Length: 467
Ligand code: GDG
Image (cartoon, rainbow, N blue to C red; front, side):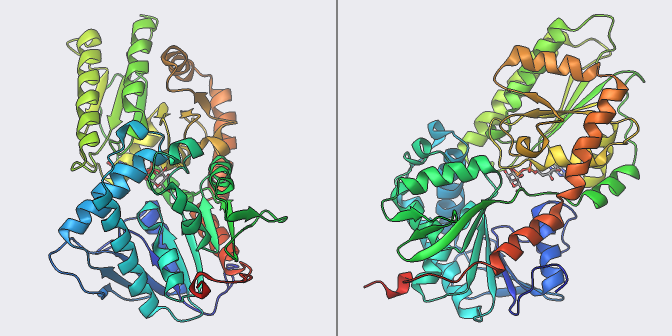
């Protein structure tokens, strides 16, 4: 295969979400679709929760590759998805141990679903197939596969940050993490900061040892932990933005537009962002054109209580800032809670003078990359980026960097972005654009898969041979 990911078997991808019909352009699902379209293979994801389960896949599509779902009960969905995945792993991996909701029954459901996925994959995998597991919903699948005697190459990509050791210790299963990771041949993380965190956790595992070449060995199994920063389909996004419909925002011609686009999640730092914009409004020069901050934040995971709380906090903050600053003909914050079409988002990125990408913790943050790809290089906008986005590792040199907890400095950065001269905007944007186009989504899938297919098969004693 010309893409450097030569392999004789199929690619089998496991992800929680799987599109039932057409694959939406952009995002992770599109990346998986692209990779599978080129290599052929099988994509496995969760079915709509039901009442009964069998260890069986239901085919939901075929073509260049097959798509199938594994069954899950409503009770398992509560324990696996809402419980352990999103009320333990998600908060903990985003440094929010205060939001942990521990219940051993949730972990049991998580382990049971992971074990079922493993049995299903084991029943379908041929020896040369390469298995690629996506994200925190399936951290135990590889270990279960090894117990079943599966010796295929298995990779994991974790889309969210890796927790530091002290946060990880808040998880009752902390002692198991080394075993989960070691069952893969390759563990991919977003940044080198995440790799360092994972290495600290592995160093605390008495059974794990680092080798001279930087790989790890645990109970005879050799594995690597490396960073593969995810990218976007930059070419496609730039084209969509250039021909996107122009939305009439009913703003004065010279009024700056600031834009935020995030799933409504406490990790995205939305309240801090609203506070910083509020402080900017208090201090801005009265002669400056009145800015509009448009925040698109479609609700997500509404069944988890922490998500209801963040929604209330945000609405309160937006209301009080607007109450303090709005005029009859001006609402400084416009906040949209529903999903907006991708081409409209692309057009808004292109129109926006400033993008606010300021999470408190984030694996990567694709919005930062989409915003850069969408700009007109002749008259680009300014990216304000948090140190805590994974994207900071690649984009920190040219974006305007902020600490979202430092409200005053954040407000000053907003002021600086609004007034940044064209020459500086162009220079920063050219630098950012180069990286976003070079390390795009195809680069990401190819780097991960070529590394995985070349992983050395040098385990001395696999898990299945343990007494
Ligand atoms: C996880 C990690 C990592 C948002 N609102 C709308 C909409 N979006 C799109 C954006 C962007 C995507 O959703 C969000 O991507 P992120 O990267 O910010 O975030 P997560 O969903 O948290 O994803 C993250 C990512 O995995 C990939 O590895 O970067 O750190 O948390 O594409 O444009 N799209 C449309 N309407 C909306 O209203 N069409």
